[in-house]
Length: 502
Image (cartoon, rainbow, N blue to C red; front, side):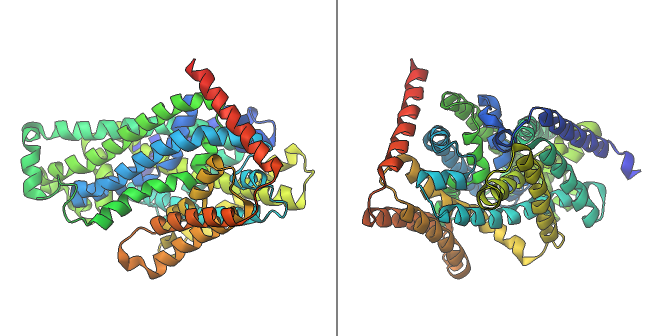
């Protein structure tokens, strides 16, 4: 029976474990600060792995291996761009954002940070940034729910609606119960599961080739003549556009919030080393699975019908074919882990935006900590219901927006984050104009200039940066209070980094 197969049993135990972690985190959460930012208590390992797991969605185990299987290493440029972007984000943004958010009235969210950083008394930045987060993340959450539903549908033969509801409810439960700590701890567990699956699968696939393992290059050349070339069929614009995915990291709220929650600036360098090692190994494993998968299914043509119909199933098919059903269940749970880790943090970011930046700021300034926690949990359900309503029709046009939601965040928030951390002359008007220009450019470019082949984050990021600089220089200088807080945060960051080097 389907309901007694080892993979399903493994998935059930996995989901129960995630909910148990949520219950444990519930006992460690006593106030709203802890619910939405973990009380700024994350160590280097949890900071690093939770940031990585929340970043890498089902794309890591499905989209990337499938792209490599279909087109070869020419699809690897996005991975290269992501590695460079993530490293620069850790190096330039992580520690500084941790210091600045604490000095900016202990900002708990990005809209909160922007408001305090520029003394936005009219709260224009808070509303604009909250709207950007809610619109793009509602769509992102819907995409994650679709991916989870498709996974359950493919593995267990459930109908789409049932699969959608079960996958969504599992994530909603531990987010509602445990908040940020639950997400961070489960992400750490999920990151371990993902790297285990991504390193083991290509190794076992290579060994399964037996005598043919010595002739992988020959087999690849006969099956995909240009599979080993990173340049075949690509223009300069295509390569630049792929590398530009790395720019998106500077503006992703669900990743930046991990930096804000770190225990201190001092743990960031260690977290960077852990996080980048994890990321490089995972991306390498995903590409290896797709690459060696070409050779495996060429040697075993009787097994390749499913993969040829949908290349994104290459990782799943290799796992089901090569592993004991119980081990396969654990490895396939890594796909669910990738989906749930990203979806959970997106739900919480949306929830905290509604609670902290809208409910508390505009409706209930004196709300108690207990009230805010329960409102936050309610907002998780609200956002989840919106996402489910979008995901009920997985082919709906709105889900196509996910293709440039990454670019939208990168262009709207990226230049704003970087310049706010490095340039004390930046002004409120510069921030507002830059955010609007970045978001609008991405949307306009995608819809009206898509035939150029240039990824929309590039013009969006450039124009947003120029807008911030030009408007800030034309504007009157920031107040002494704004400059003072900036200098205090900068001095604290430099002090902690100097102490760490002693």
